[in-house]
Image (tube, rainbow, N blue to C red; front, side, top):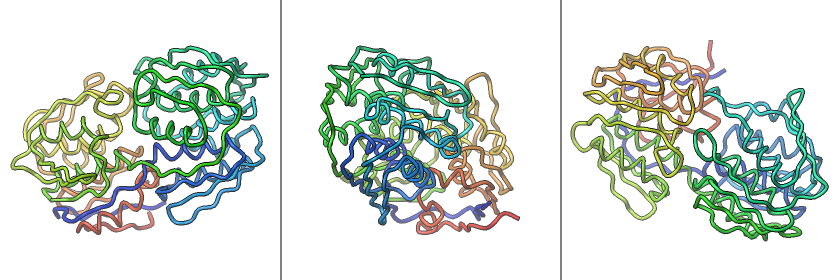
Length: 420
């Protein structure tokens, strides 16, 4: 395994180009299973999750070719079952189920894995498939779905924590090849869902309402190949914006799509961070002393759960008391104990973290527990005095393209080593 050694105390300066969105590209790659014709996807980030998805599609019978940040996929002949050892490693792989069911009218997929950040059941995915007419069976770690034909239906996919992003994507993909009209109420509104709908429409689907809580899909007989460019990663952009503020630096985020970041930018401004919009780019720098803020994570367009840990790292550095309440995942505070090793003062009370900020941080060995926790530890390490060693950075590589080299380009002292 590899670790990152960060020697903190250096303000970040310069510019960084935001990569394609990890949470968009995985469903986009899965969507290519809906057609036998070749598809081309551009601005694909070089991530371990993306490579895993490529392996899954290859195992299913698709031809997958990576060329820099472009992937070409041709799924001329495919099988309807996903490999357990591949699918279990990554939660996003469950999104192959909708395309397989839509095209083959059958799918067998192992229950997915991913970060350990709380229960993330797929019951809403299955609810949507059942509404389309699929028969479902869950046993021995696999989900089996089959249907003689899929028929459009009206369904409500809201859950305990709001709408489901992957569930919306999965059911939407299956519904593109169903007979008749499907209406999804309480659909996820995230930009990644809109990006997928745009790609499916380019393939010949008929989807309206993407970006709103009501999606209407009129089924078609077949889809064709298409080309598409992935949207920028709003979570990566938020992470670098927070890192700039945490180190009292100044960073230009190239291609950050500010229109996808309203909730994050609002809280950063409240915290005393100056943000200038320059077309698709953002210039971020500290605007005097940081100020404490209260945050509650919500579904889009609220504050994203995927930025909660990073924002906590910033509040640790901020004098005063901040409260962060997690409403999406009940176990997404695993980074708290590791931040405490650096000197953070955080108490957990139910779904809320109470941060008593402003105390100086000092470097220490820490352990990454999940993808976004890893990013929070990187931010804290960049602001701490001395050296911080972050172990298990394979979590980081799942969602951040070349983060250590990007940070070095901004002046950070970051080194990747093999763990002893």
